Image (tube, rainbow, N blue to C red; front, top):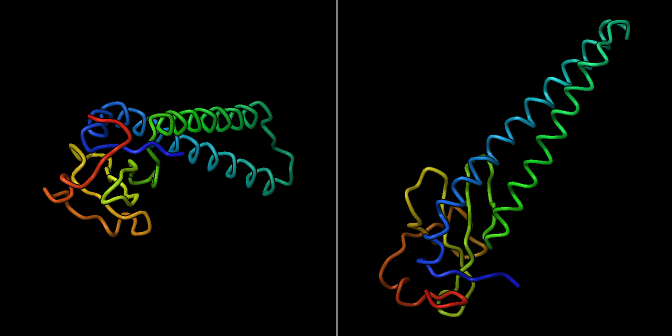
Amino acid sequence: MPRFFTLHQAQRLIPDVDAAIRDAVFLKSECQQAASELQNARQQIVMAGGTLIHRDRLIAQKSRGETSAAKLNEAIEKIHSFGCQVKDLDLGLIDFPSLYRGEEVCLCWKLGETGIEYWHGVSEGFQGRKKIDQEFLDNHKGDLTN
């Protein structure tokens, strides 16, 4: 069962979520770089007919990629442990489940934003973001009081 946040509750988590998503974005880049280097090394082996194998370097590249992937999974799990959801790692997009007029919605925050200023319906996603206004504030709730 998901946790539902008030805007205030979600806002208080932003510093922790910000640090964790920054780690995750960096680690994703590390994973991609390690995978690219490993693919390039494999292509060089094929082009050299398999005669120029730098086994230690290949093992190190593979290990680096696996380590980065494990740390990336840990960073994402840390974000999920707060009760929020990673929606787009490239954008640093995070959703905090909330309730608005009895329906599940998402408070929407993106890396680089100073706070949570938008919400959207569960099926609308980022493209359906709406500015949080007084009407929303008066009619949304979380699991617990602020």
